[in-house]
Amino acid sequence: MINIPKGTKDVLPSESYKWNEVERVVQVLRNKYNLHEIKTPMFEHTELFVRGVGNSTDIVNKEMYTFLDKGNRSITLKPEGTAGVARSFIENGLFNETLPLKVYYITPCFRYERPQAGRLRQHTQFGSEWFGVDSVEADAEILMLASDFYKSFGINPTVLINNLGCSECRKKYIQALKNFFEPQIKDMCPDCQKRFETNPLRILDCKVEECKAINKNAPVITDYLCDDCKNRFEELKKVLTEVGVNYKCDSMLVRGLDYYTNLIFEFVDEDKKLGQNALGGGGRYNNLVEELGGKPTPVVGFGIGIERLLLYLENKGIEIKNNQQLEVYVANATNNLIEIIKLTKVLRDNNISAEMNLTQRTLKAQFKYADKIKAKYVMVVGDDELNSNKFTIKNLEDGSQTQVDKQDLIKYFKG
Ligand SMILES: [Zn+2]
Ligand SMILES: [Zn+2]
Image (tube, rainbow, N blue to C red; front, side, top):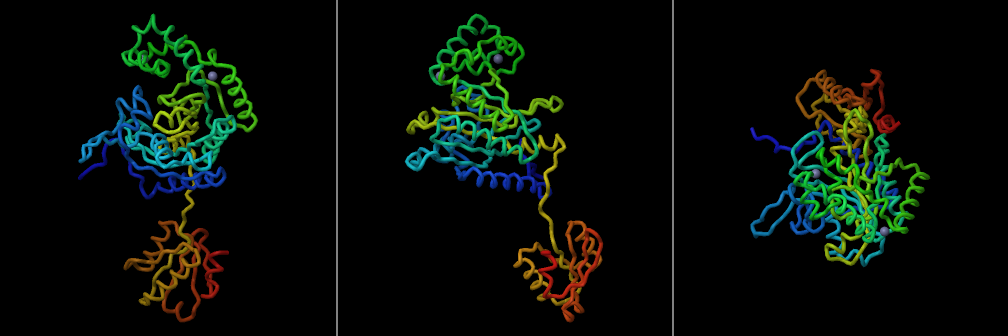
């Protein structure tokens, strides 16, 4: 037998309704927020992610699925959703269309990670990116969108927010970090020693205990913000309070990707019992489009891992309702095949979910089957019923039985 590759997962028929519900929620938000879907390929030229995600990130250094195709091109399965969307925005000249452009996607992403709870080598992301706006309103709305998504599943995680400042603030802050780390960098992990050279900001992200201890006393970005950045962040906080987004400031939050500027955020659950629960995150990346060769265009967006969300809901004991129920099982007690098929078709033509007997089962076995698949009604079709045009309908939920005339069937099931 051939097994599923490590770090991947089947969505089985018995649980796919959860995915259908995620998609339904996204459709509802698409309408409410007037978003448009964008679909980009599963793989791109490796160069896109090296430039777009950043050379100093773990994703690019350790986790990408990169291979040479038969034409000797270096190809990478997309490790995240944003870079491909930004590439498409530039390549298709979407900056010439009406801005802001608000897009969303649900896409598989691929990262070679050590498989552990909630971390898969193929996972699915729901993301939204808003191009061509750089305002407090846009920052607030993108957080409201993500927050509405979570609320649709009955949860309200805290969003940690931080401000990495504009390039001016950032320059000053990075210098301050360098001054702080320089005398003690030799006591930090090899990864941090590398980061000290390439991107000192990411030292703050380190999970190694010795590094975490040193990081506790590191300078915080909030002390290096220019007045504009400071005021804007204050205004955002005011808006979030007004609209009921559950936020907390976290000056240690830096996130793993290189492209963030100004706002960054991460949705976390503070339920200590379930351990660390980063549910999704994002921020503003005003330099990304330019970095990839496009006209400078501000962007704000987020990505939410769907498998992780579903696992989290399960751990929390929050059930997703299964909205799919078979209305009518048409049981077969006649050899008149054509009439059975036609009756089932009439039901479906009237938008009633219907299934007919496809087997050689006895009537009794058909009832058992209908019970197992949780049909709401069983309609028995035998020669007597076809002659009299009266059908016996059993309600499997309460056990009651009713005789219904053929011309009243649709009204009965719809009523
Ligand atoms: Zn600034
Ligand atoms: Zn470290």
